Image (cartoon, rainbow, N blue to C red):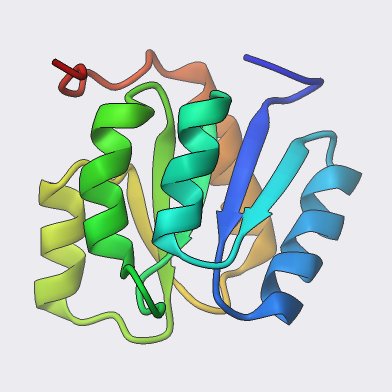
Length: 132
């Protein structure tokens, strides 16, 4: 794992949310980068590995489920946590089926999110399809 506690990519089209998460997570010892949509997240993940991706579900250009599908290939080591104010049983089940490590409502309970990151960092990396 990179950095003091790991590398996290925060993906959300709301700049206030990405900025807030970045400050909180950096304060907890994580290296943090941000992206404004799924397409940008995939490009960043291709350039450099991340331990975690905090991924909004509803975004312009590319939604979170589509991004999750591609992240499984370009960043199979990353634990993806879906965050959304628009969770429904179908979206949550689909995110988990696609390999999300967890699904949390937005705004998340920060203490729970940090505990989840700690728990996931102690697990083995997920097995996901490798690029062909």
